[in-house]
Structure formats: C-alpha cells, structure tokens
Amino acid sequence: MTGKIGHLELVVLMTLTIVGTAFVELPRYMAMRAEQSGWISVALGALGGLIVVFVLCWLARRFPGKTLVGYAEAILGRPLGKLVSIAFATLLLVIAGMLIREFAYTIIIATQPMTPDSLLVAVFVLLVAYQIYWGLEVIARVAVTFLPYIFISPVLVTFGTLGYVKLGRYLPLLGTGLGPVLKASFYASMYYSEMVLAAMILPRVRACTPARTRRALILALGLAVPPLTAVTASCIGVFGPSETSRLVSPALELARLVTFGESVQRMEALFVVFWMLAAMVKIGIFTWSSIEAIAETLGLVNYRALIPGGSLLLYLLAMLPENIWDEQAERGAMVKIMPYVLVGLPLLLALLAWVTKKKGAEASES
Image (cartoon, rainbow, N blue to C red; front, side, top):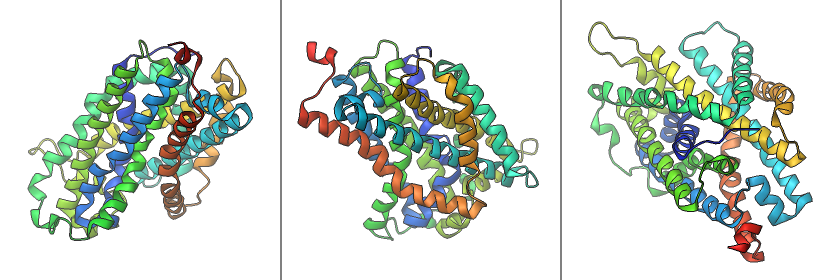
C-alpha cells in the first residue's frame, strides 16, 4: 500500500506541511491583525502546534499502530467514529483545494498574469494525483531532496532585504496591545496545528517509539518557526504594517527587492519555484491523508482506487470560488474553523479516551 519512512522524513514532511504555503500569505494576515507586532504572533502561534504534538504522542502511545481513523473508531465506536473520520477527511480535501487555488493565484500574479486559473489548477491537481499515486515514501524522498533549497529562499529573502528594513516600523513593540497579538497568534496557530496530519503518518514510520516521535515532531515545529517569523518580520520592517496588510503577497514583493550585485537580479522567479515545491509537498500530504483516511474508513486495502474520484473532487473544490475575492472570503471562513478542528479533534479524542480509559490492545498488554 505505502512504503515506510524514517524519522528524518517525518521531520521534513511536517516542517514543509507547516511552511509550504505560509510564506505567501502569513505576513499579510499578521500585519492586518497585530500590525508591527505581527512577527511576535507568528512565534506565539507555535503553542497550538505544541499542544497537537503532545496530544498526538499520547494517543499514539495509547493506541499503537493506529491512525486518527483508528483513534476515532476505538474511542467513539465504529458508526460515530467513521462519521467523524469522513468529516475529517473531507475537511482536509477542502483545505487542499483551497491551497491549490490560492497558490495558482500567486503564480498568476508573479509570472503568468494572462493564464486562466482553471488551467493552473488542473496542472496542480494532476501533479498532486501523480504524487499520491506513488505513495508517502516517494513524497517524503522528494521533500528531503528539496528541503535545503526550500529553506535557502527565506534566508536569502531575509538577508537580501536587510538594507531596506527600518527599525522604527517595529515600534512601539506592543503598540496594538496584547489582545490583538494573542488573536493574531490564534490565526498563526492554524498553520502549526496542521501537525495533526502526523496522526495519519505515524503508523508508516519505521521504529516508531513515543520518545522518538515526540522529538521528531518537536524538531519539525522548531524548524518551521524561525523562517516564518523572519519573513514576517522582514515584510513588516521593509513595507511597514499598513502596506504589508494591503499587499496580496508581501513575501513575493519582498523577494522582488533581492539582488546580489549586477549579475544576480530579479530572484523572485527562483523563490516562486522553491515555494511551489514546498506547496506541492504540503498539498500532496493533505490530499494523501484525506484519501488514505477515506480508504481506511471504507475498509479498502489500496487507497489508489480513490485517486481518480478524489482528484476530480479536489479540482471542483479548488474552482468553487468564482474569483480571488471569493477565495479570500472562503479563506477567512476556514481560518475560524481550522484551529478548532485541527487542535480540538485530537484533544477531544484524547480527553474521551482518558475518561473512558480506552486503549489499544498492545497498550493494554504492556
């Protein structure tokens, strides 16, 4: 069905799941909600991901070898557990479609202003289908291969624009008050809470022990925080909070400013390539997790039978908004839902398992 991956691949997959599309949109939303303190909210938002990590590790220890689908069925019973699993899988597919449409708009704005978004969405869906056909192990290997290049891009953007930064744009540090900063951190936690996808991956990790899993997931979270914080801080320091909040993709505009001498200029195209690779890995993991969850819920041995139907549904979901403004409105609605579901679902399952004292057979024997 799928190959096994190691803990290094787990770290890389979870890191890219968090940062895959966040570079494109996170600075704008942070500036809108916390103004000059938005970069602080990015770092604080990691607490949501940390909660997910500890809850998932507790569930994995209590129900060895099971995915989130297995947790739900063991804790809630089969009928209700299957219903929850289908709802969770549907949400993941909706998010994947939303990410595809959003990234298609980024490519159009950056390099192809005359290209129909439907064409780019179709290309992305085909690439995602190709990824998940070959399985988790292949996606993980691609992620490991390109991780250094993907992480180079925020480093170059941050250091390449230092000359444009004005420190006064960060002051006063908490000028908006603590409340807006905390509210913005709740939005940022949406990205970190995507660590919940690890619940679908852990049974496919070789030599998966609770201690090693916890270390790997915390490391993935730790690797994601600095580049996201740095890019957000750079956008605010270069453009100011007001301009950052108005730009559709402030990170892309930031990349346009990066030049190294006379020979290396207009590097935003290179950054778009790197960010596209990260986005494709992220969307691939979301889609794979969704289709794998549906297959497991339906009792299918091979999830590949669901790829054609799942790809068609993914395309339809991505094309559901009529224009970029409808897509942004959809994004705003999802922002209010995702943290509650992605953090709340595993937390609720863990609470119910603790109250009812339910555990897997292997955990009971030990």
